Image 1 (tube, helix red, strand yellow):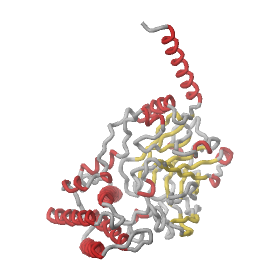
Image 2: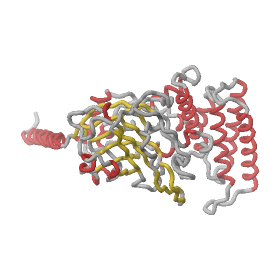
Image 3: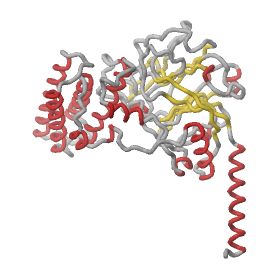
Length: 444
């Protein structure tokens, strides 16, 4: 039988836990989860709220510009279009401080390396999200991650690839939930998980098969790739970008040996040969079985060559494999952006894998305690979350939009530990003065 002291300790512990839960409950703010579609859609899709794509701007609005620095180069560019939100589609008309009607347009620099407060603009129109046609991208639109930026995807060509500057279009849906003010707190985390599971369900098991994290041996056994010539183009470009970089002398890396230089030039010649072959073919055409086998053999030869040069060049074989995974996912997104029904043209396993990256995964207690989940959580209103102190610094402000690092995006914003926020002062919001909105970007 438990002693009186033990029983007393349990009662006190229970009361304290309840007290802490009550205190955190009192901080609850109504908020809105923003959920994107699993796959992108064609630009012609009728969504009124969406990430990426092209904004349906009123004709009197100019596409915002700002000075942006990437790799020490400062240039005035048109900002990356991030999102369009039709406010009539949001829940919470009775409690939300946002306008009940109209459309918000979010623009931001996509250079986040070393930038805690990226240049941004938020525009507001009192018209619906489908009132106007898509605005064509301006000629000075910045490449994603900036010209020669550290996070720029080197195998995308800004002169040729539409999605080197324009994010894929993802329709949005919205779900209300309660957000709580806490930091690294088990009780707060428990409340957070309860609320998220109310809105999103219990979650799916976590899956490790994310293509960009596969090993070379896994790709060697996989006969599904390359499934079209666009993918071959991207994979060859990714190899060529690595080879060109390794052939370029850099003061902070030891000089190339003669043997390594010869091998890199051989790989470059092979890549150029494949690119020339690609130019004569239709990108979305299927690849026959013999060509598939030949191309996989070439790619494995590239990997083996880099294994032999390990320590002599900056590229690792794991990067070659990651490039392939990213190229597969990017190709499927390009196919979805061209035709919403791509199940007959892309391997089903790749489609399922890509869609699964957006699904709500079963959270752990630790996930809730640190507000750091395996699934990217985007939201409007509430407190928001981040790995540093932006949410604390902006406690008196209104969270217009939070976009977490999402595998829907490429290197410029795919780290699940990174968070982009758009904030506005309550007085400015009341006056509908969105010119005072600011952005913060944090990464763990």
